[in-house]
Image (cartoon, rainbow, N blue to C red; front, side, top):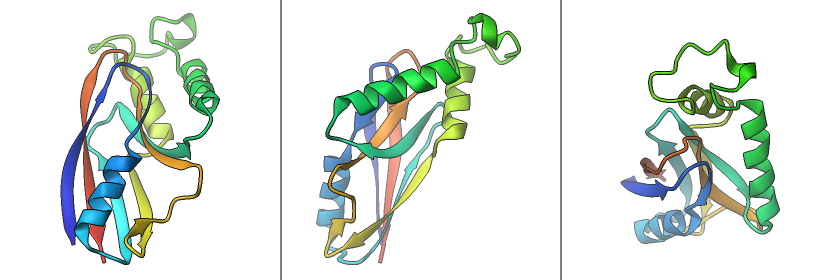
Length: 140
């Protein structure tokens, strides 16, 4: 078993890939076969495995979620009561609830079993920059 916490810095909404950092952790562990759990320690961002070849995919996902849960000052969001941390906060919680805060990824031959075009992303849902803490936990 091996565990590490990493930090991903964000500059507002979007997908921030950190696959290389996770791959390096797995290689350093010396564990050949196992399961990697990736867990984000926040409630207003999430984790996704997504295509890392065409940036249009990331742009379209950002736009979809922006339309799904616009800022709380949008007329369609009048029903929102949680506004103490800004107009982006409750929509960020909604987006995080619809995605994931943890991922399970198999490890074989000391490598992540991701598909050819798959990458691991932090999906930031807040407007201002953050330092997001992510726990990597690998068991054999």
